[in-house]
Length: 315
Image (cartoon, rainbow, N blue to C red; front, side, top):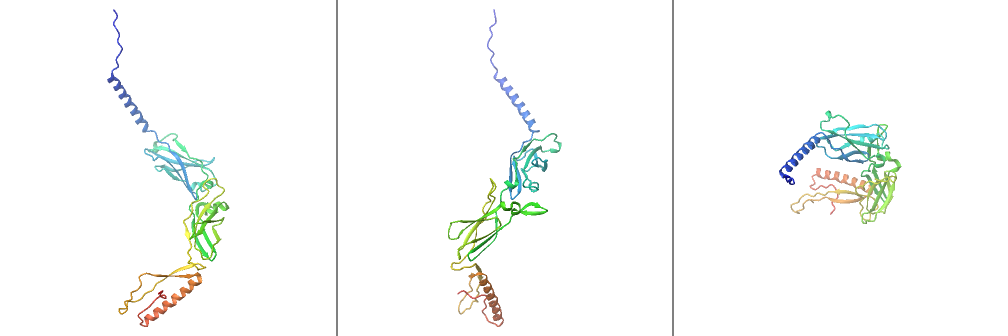
């Protein structure tokens, strides 16, 4: 008589034990591999304005460090920012040697104790970067402006760079030459309608309406580019004119003092008064009158007169 065979019933306790052992082994393997592997850099990005050039990347290192290398196309690699925990590296001093060259960079990852590391470190390459075509134009600065009659003169400060030629630092205009132009946006202070003017130098001389105040801003432009053609617009500046005047106005403070006299109860004014004087001739005339009156006031004081003044009172 044959012994009947019954299907084997799995033991749940044994299955759970095997799973726990397997999980523990996996954790040990993962922990051991984590002590030797390093994280590779990613999202390498060039940030450049007026040829000031920085390479940025991610992530922040935890148990590793970075070294950056840069090379012109078909050139040799040069190491920068050795074993750093930063996620950026200033490469300006390398790219300004030839801003027309195309460069490539790479970020190498090392364990934190890089001195004991042997072998080829993992690395990530950056996109190619040509400074002349890709550096962004910085915010232009208005150096000076003057409105005389129907002419408005605006001068743009020529931005300096770290690019050198024969040992001399070049300005932005020196580097780009006629490829760099400026656009002036100007409008009457009493309206919003804008007009534009362009120049390949750093100076504008435009016709305006006599006796009107004008506001304006400036933008640098490189039309030959496919991208990064324009800079941000500069801050807005304005001329100031009082209606009915046909030249620049000089705003000059004219202070008045008056001694308190008990019988009259007159107190000195607490605020300065302002006088608008037309043009350069008017300013010189006012200056001459102020000097004469001040000298007269000193003389009257010496003679014992109780009241002195520096300019003619406005009331």
